[in-house]
Image 1: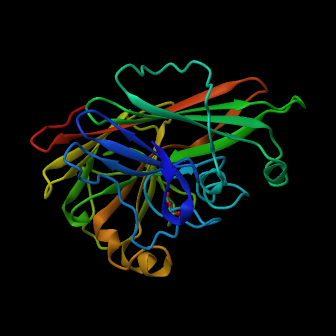
Image 2: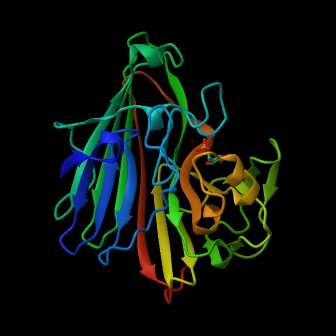
Length: 298
Ligand code: BG6
């Protein structure tokens, strides 16, 4: 289903027979809603999100490319999240299984305008797939189409905003004992101690966990729901919650909304991906939910 969304922006809605659905805006190539078969929203989108160019939509799954965060000379999180993507009607074969699945292919290509800030030619193909169990898979294929023989390097993240009942009741499993960079503390490397990650210290959390396992679980006790994130080609994982001070400073984010969201992002930040002309990179993130009685393990 292809229709107009907020402010007349084009969007596509994928539906699966049992009732789950996904909404995708061409602006940013961004997933802005993911609902389970009961119609419950699983992603967070701020009530103050602007849906107005050139600002990125606050919530859902923005794509950070060709730069994650401020790790480079481009604007924060790169430009892909505030560009108009197109529907790719004739994509080359993807390795993903699409039988029984609803999916949409999007494409973003270099433009004259972007070449001024990032002098490279590229094709970024994004397939968004909703599986029969309501699982949501994003597969990115990025190709270097430079004709001047030059390689390019980029960093990347699926900046996923999960909707949670109460951040102080949430725990993240799969990142314990790993090394991380702390965006709030400069370039130093730290090591996570002990148990699963929780959010009780009433401060902003902004960490990049390095070389993580391919599976991470986000347990929401109050809702008796566990999100399972699986990733491929993306060694790192970002965990972000702005907490109250940063929340107040963001114009497109409600003052108390930090209690109801958590970003866990499949990413590649520490070691940029380098592509020679003609080369292609693939990175996948799959998210699903299971009831909380589920006991996670690797
Ligand atoms: C996170 C970063 O991924 O995104 C944070 O680690 C950043 O440092 C946050 O504040 C939100 O970024 P933005 O540009 O969408 O406000």
